[in-house]
Length: 164
Image (cartoon, rainbow, N blue to C red):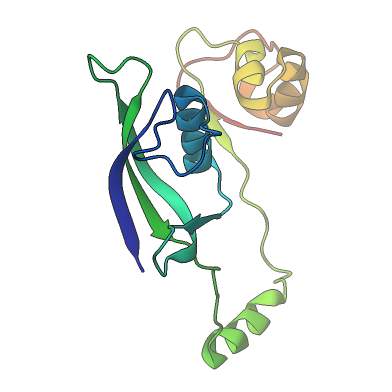
């Protein structure tokens, strides 16, 4: 099975003509459970009585409607897809390449982030946007003293500042 879809309904009250048991859940609660199953990343077991279907699946789509004249019943369309465990294979070439790339090169340095000053920017506003706290403005200033000059309030649009 790759995908199975069907339409049905959750009845408000049990009827022996189509219900095999009397403990019928509330239709809205049943739809909420189906929606929760769709949002969950874990598989669910789908068993359809009197068939051979007994599989791990995930809910790939569901849609519910209400019909006039049948108060409380919830009609729905649902699709299930077969769930499979993710398997990752490594080829011999990739295994050799990953061993070579596992050694860290000593001649490379991390590339620092550079911010270009815009009109209306202050070191405080740049620190808030780029570093998460406006109190970090002095760290930006210390790192870029030669670019900014003696007054930290005199930054100009177009200047490139290295972030700490």
